Image (cartoon, rainbow, N blue to C red; front, side, top):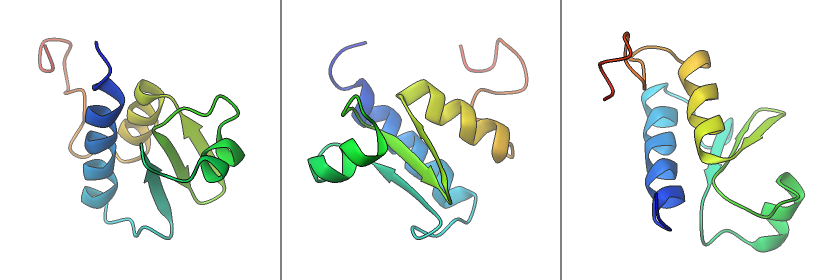
Length: 86
């Protein structure tokens, strides 16, 4: 995947946060354009997207999606079977 991967996956993560009915104050997905000091405070690598869900922080695109899929499984991001997302 190219440079657009983090932006695309951040959009998916934001959509999942909204679908789960979470408010921006309880869960936020930071993507490109956020203040670097904010990003570095949450992720020492300085990369986005970053998900902050309450006190829990997860970063890296697939890790964010995996976390959201486990915590808010309905509807599943990756499908019910290996063939669904393919």
